[in-house]
Length: 347
Image (cartoon, rainbow, N blue to C red; front, side, top):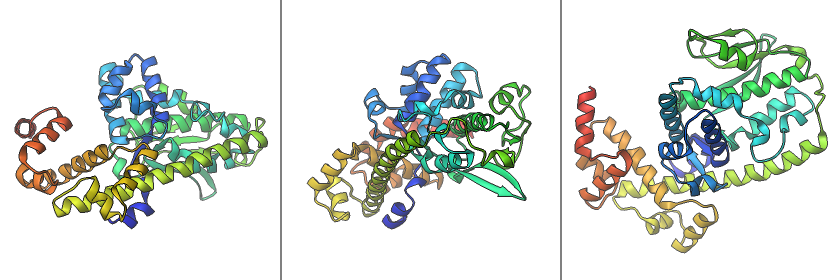
């Protein structure tokens, strides 16, 4: 993928904001999963979580939920956390959706601002055959992120149910992708309307008259204040994602030529090294972490093609096999030879 494609489609890189993730970690604590365990599963420290500009890979968040689900013996932990999420917890903007004129406006703002919190799909309001739906189009790459998707669904389903009630209507029906569990009572608590499981997409259906019915909590002045703040954050987020995308593309090109470091990447971006360092510092982006992530991502692709570790190390532009082995141990906690043995046993 070239630089221009990355810049045009920055959100193909699935991330969760540090603010949003911090709220989820707090909820996991309430369910009995210790904070330090969550950070360990994420592979990050408190400094990253405290950085309001930081974005964490959605893959890491999914791993955190998998560890929590196993520890708590709760396969629905993602949707439980989402159900506890409240809009006014995020960015301290207040209940922005309740300030809207009607549900239709709230749906549009949800589509506009959701990427500030979590970026693993796209919410959409759609009318089909006279029926009104709010659905969640997930990126194909997110198909295995069951817990993250559950957390997102739990959050917006709760918000939409509340808005529908405030407009004088309940939700009409919900369709969920998972197969129906033996006990569906929790799902019924989340949406409080008839549910159909095993469907090709997640969506909720509204009564048509509820879309434009004025909300009793609408407040144009507070809404304007929230929109101004979130637009500012949104613009900053786009700047960060665009810079990340350009650097990642340059890292990929440098690796393909066999040598990669900050100086080489800056030169490929037509920047001076000092200029790139300043840009990274301003956005609180770690070049080392970006390089590590790109190498690990490429490793997975090459290993899936059954390439040898020696060949992979060269493709990742490591100077020697020992440097690759050290990096591999950081990624997986074991040496490459041990990893191969576990893969063989699994197959």
